[in-house]
Length: 505
Image 1 (tube, rainbow, N blue to C red):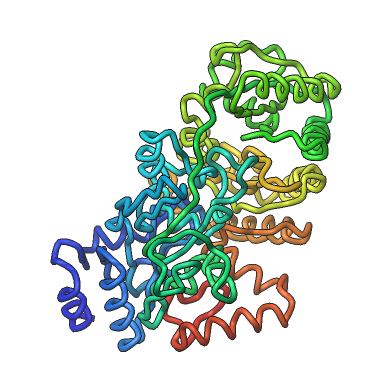
Image 2 (image 1 turned 90 degrees about the vertical axis):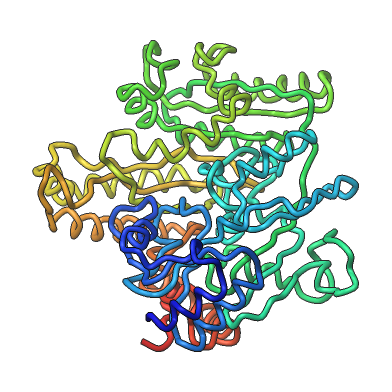
């Protein structure tokens, strides 16, 4: 590996490559607590050309490469599967290349964060529509495209961030560099449209979870931020899951455009208040589930009409409106006006200190999610004895459920489901039983949700392989995906192991 290191050292400046043990271990972790792969080398290229040269060396030496954006993924998406290989950190590629204000398209390097990009755009009265994942302050734009990310702001209006994609610059696993969309025509002076010039090859790299290429530049549609907005929060009545789904369905069927619509189940409200996360709800007599909406408009008349229509739906479904101000319980205002969409989403999984998430993120039809959440409760009861093994050590039982349920494009929602548990190192001792139980429970829960027909999008190491292991893909679909991988990446160098694409061992 020392010869490989020397070759790579010639590509980037010395301070942008490391084989230091501490650095390598820092890159062996994301948010998850049970998956860990320590790379041999960490490298930070500055552009597509350096990425290309790195990939060519990796092919010559048959060394796996794992691309990494912000490292905010929850289950092994941006670290090696097992020890060894190269982690290719894209965060050095973090510049805004061009803002085309005439055509409302921004071109950026793929390692830039959604937070930095939107901070730049706000100076021009613009935003990215969907503002990336809930961890968007540090999550990279390239990672968002790799995962069809949602979770920040604007998902109900704009859908996943890939909906706004115009073109990509991608380094293929063999080191070739391509451009998609309008830029597939070498005479095109600037990005302006995703579709045309033949098939939509950009789609190969949307949601690929980093197996088909390394994104180095991304062009996105951007949008003027409307001057008027309204935001309201409501407590739900009994049967909150079914009622919240009914509200979302009615809004979609009536064609009312909302910027965000989110349901927080009663478990989140109760535990959040208990742990001091929601001081504005501490005085609520009943800690029931909450639903809130945000709308935008270009005039007060348009805004008032939307509010009127939405409030009628809320009243008819027997919700109870909370106050107008944040201190009165209006989390919708905090979420929109103070960028709360980037401040609490993933934190909900860490409500208890030292507990960590074992989760996965999926899309489902609106009408399906109450059944999914109810079945997670049933699963939790069925696995009480296994949960007890962890409780016997920690004196706190793992908590199963879902984070906020977000309305996204179409009649679909995003569900972040799973459970929180503990690291195997607890109170000064290593407890193998905790890790064994965590892995068993995680697989069991994700398989259960998969069989509801949900669509996983941020799949990473764990979910991509589980889909294959449990036979969730048809044989024909999986073989097609494998054939594409073999053409683009004959040695299975890039993100080796995801979707069980191992190549030579």
